[in-house]
Length: 238
Image (tube, rainbow, N blue to C red):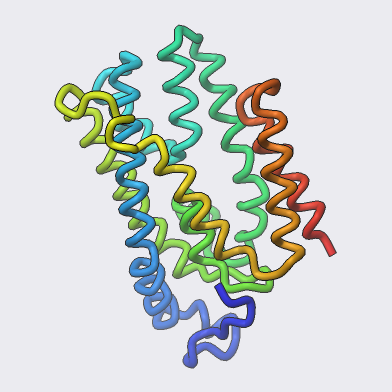
């Protein structure tokens, strides 16, 4: 998004911006902006549901996992570990490593998350890669309304897609024949494009990709992602 994007005309201060009227306006905007992303997320979730059934996770466990965990890559990692005979501990470690990116993401959006601890806790559940990108206003500013509006749409798409994949696994067959294996990379490339606003950001993105690709064959799941994130953050640091 444009780094110079202005707040709504009705919002001249942060207090006004987070007023009920301003929040509703931004929530609806976030909801609309996330619809195209939610379509891709739905396909990704269907693929997860199929993979989870193939890993003998049953019907309710994958759906409950999507309802409570709501983290696509981490859930895929856990299902893959279980499906290849790995233990629960290994699956949890893989999922935690992949979800470690939410530490810097959470820190970046913390100023926009208003309210008491319980309210912030439930709001944080809707902060994922897609809603984080939609909620970014530029200059380190985030719209709480857009974050949560986008998060609701993506959450429904993820849980709904998981249910479709789990319940229809026997009819869908191999998800690879539908091209669902490329949904996640394409989705993240689309999100990345909006964040590359200058040459410096482009160089950081290329370095991050190079680090991730070089570590993937030799490092544990999640480590390449963490390392590439660190490289990007160091490169963007002013």
